[in-house]
Length: 108
Image: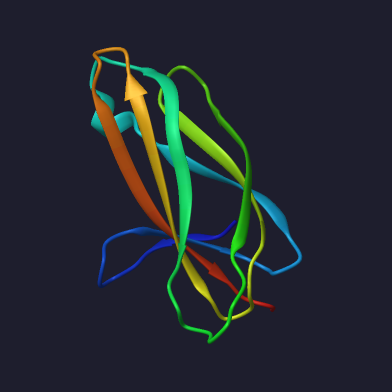
C-alpha cells in the first residue's frame, strides 16, 4: 500500500482499492523502547462518513511478531471513503499502547 502522513491529523495514511485485500502494519517501535508486544487487545475500524451509506472494511488475520509490529488484513470498503484503523496492544512491561492510521479506499 502507498503511505503518507495526513497533514491535519499527523496520522499515517494508506491507500487500497475497494476489491483489494491488503495487510496494514502498525510499527510500535518508537513507543516500545525496551519492551515488546505480547498480545493484541483489538484492531478496529471507524468509517469516517465521507460517503453516505458507505460499507465498512473487513478486518481479519490480526497478528503480531512479538517485537514491534502488529498487522491486520483489510478487505472491502467503499470507494471514496476514509477509515480510521486503531490498534491496541499489550506489552511485556504490562503497558497498553495504541496507534491509529487512516485508510483511504479509492478505485483508481
